[in-house]
Length: 333
Image (cartoon, rainbow, N blue to C red):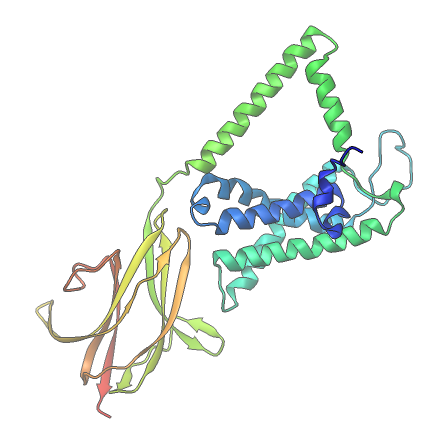
């Protein structure tokens, strides 16, 4: 007896029950997670090539599939009573819905403790896609088989084989060759743009301080008076727009300074904190921390110095890449 060669038998029953197009969507979600989270692989162009449809097409496709599980009108029955949409409308609505859904997910994440970071974005977009995919599969399977939407893969493949390998005339053969070459050039161009992004834009890093106002972080209400030995909470923020991963170091100093003739001299200082986050391009990092000074005095300078890589032995405002500071008074206990 010959062994069965149906590769679908290697997958669980719920996966085998998925329509082919939704199975491809699920595979895209899984491949995106692997490409974005696997060390080494996440530094290759594969991450961007798979990630683009994951953000710009997949969420909208499953949403439209859940809203319109019915097949659309066909050329054989143009006057039939159909509640579905045709293939072109489905693709167009999928792009439009993705462009609407993905920013909304990002907006919601921006107001959560997780923020706009890689893992929360992957989780949120992937979770939305999987949930709408399940609804789409359930609604489609509830319809009679002849009314369900299905992507005609086999028809397309047979038609493509006929056009490419059995053209009706020499003119069709030439046009087919031109079409294939054009598709290859377009795919190569897009791949080059993704793989070799234009880094000619402005490169910079952001450094800022925030405070907590209820459940929100605001650039206001900074402390002006501290008490020796008592902790005071602040939130440090760093944003990477350097078009490459950067290992940052932030040194926090409390300094007694003397300002004379537009010149500032550091008379005394103590190092309070050191932070060393590693950020990808376009990643933002927030760190709540507590300042607990031992030095006392009026008009002391609480200084945050940002460095790329390791700081020098004697960090100063002059040798820092970025700096922010607050003027505070520290009272004795």
